[in-house]
Amino acid sequence: MFCRNCGQQIEDNAAVCIHCGVAKGQGTKYCNNCGAETLPNAAVCTKCGVALAVQPAEGERKSKLTAGLLGIFLGGLGIHNFYLGYTGKGIAQICLSFCFGAGAIWGFIEGILILTGNINKDAKGVPLKE
Image (cartoon, rainbow, N blue to C red):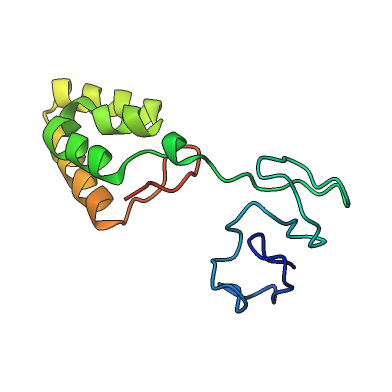
């Protein structure tokens, strides 16, 4: 396996590259399969044909603070879940709020979990930005 940031070979079980200190899988300069240089937004390595995990642009990542505050203040309406792309979960919170009043408590708890980092990805699996 190769570092996507510096192209140096790293151990398969390594959490970070010992050459550049970047977390495994982070970076867009090199193929993690063969170590060949790639274009930053390439979906496939042109040398070995392996699919590359494309990192989302900073503008495409959802804000942890925004999601957490939406959960705390508007959690009963599921707004934070709609923001993060969990549409079904958001609809369930709306139904619980109108039927039993429990959706607000659920949303408040999720808002705190988002702000503390226990919920740290959106529905597409993209990490939330600080």
